[in-house]
Amino acid sequence: MNPAAFELPETKLDEIDKKILTIFHEDGRISFTDLGKQVGLSRVAVATRVTNLMEKGIIEKFTAVINPSQIGMDVSAFYNVEVEPQHLQSVAEQLSLDPAVTSLYHMTGPSKLHMHGIFSSNKEMENFLVEKLYPMEGVISVDCQVLIKRYKSRMGMKL
Image 1 (spheres, rainbow, N blue to C red):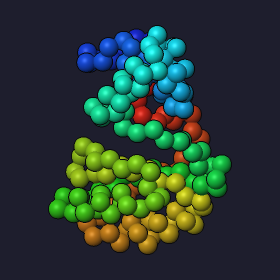
Image 2 (image 1 turned 90 degrees about the horizontal axis):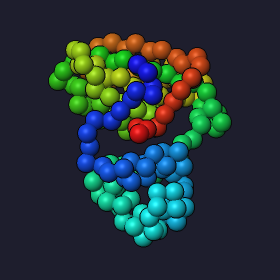
Image 3 (image 1 turned 60 degrees about the vertical axis):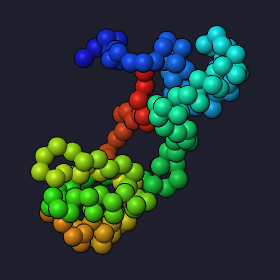
């Protein structure tokens, strides 16, 4: 797919809201004054639009993106976890509470969870597998792949 050909489906967002979201995706710390200058609105009008985007759930939250390797979290692993259907919700709830788990999704297939976790070492990852994940009631199988090199990573959706 040609990246230049990417288009959003029809939405209820006007061009100014789309510009606001694009600018925020690049710089979430931009002031409403500077944002207003870029989209041609007053600070108050931009603040109102941002509040509206938040109330609609289009903007979920503002956050800092931390580079895990810069704080000693050097092991990044992706998991496919097969779970007995009757335990899927319970396993998902337990895993979502674990601080090592950065993302968790229910995928198509026979009760599959796809998960990402970060760890300070291979030993910490092994302990997570042996002491937490494998013993969970309902876990049938675990496939784990460790990240070698990150080429692209993006938080949220870019317009």
